[in-house]
Image 1 (cartoon, rainbow, N blue to C red):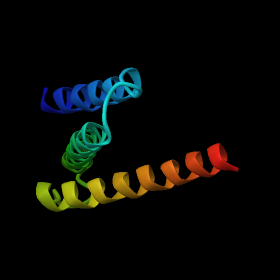
Image 2 (image 1 turned 135 degrees about the vertical axis):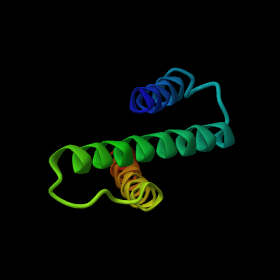
Image 3 (image 1 turned 180 degrees about the vertical axis):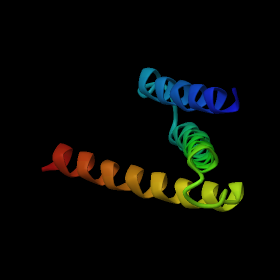
Length: 91
């Protein structure tokens, strides 16, 4: 159930960012991005732990370490996609 809640939070922040992109300021957009990043990273960490538990291929990873790694990966992906979109928009 916890996984569903965090995925729902991530999708809600994405929907709010898309719907209110013209009306909100940069600070609010940055806060939405951080909330979405944290909830997405935590969802990925929970999925990794569930897979590790059910398959028993490797020991159950610590949740916070997995959260930090998955959040960093999501942040790098967001930065890359933003750079590509800005490059296409300007060029």
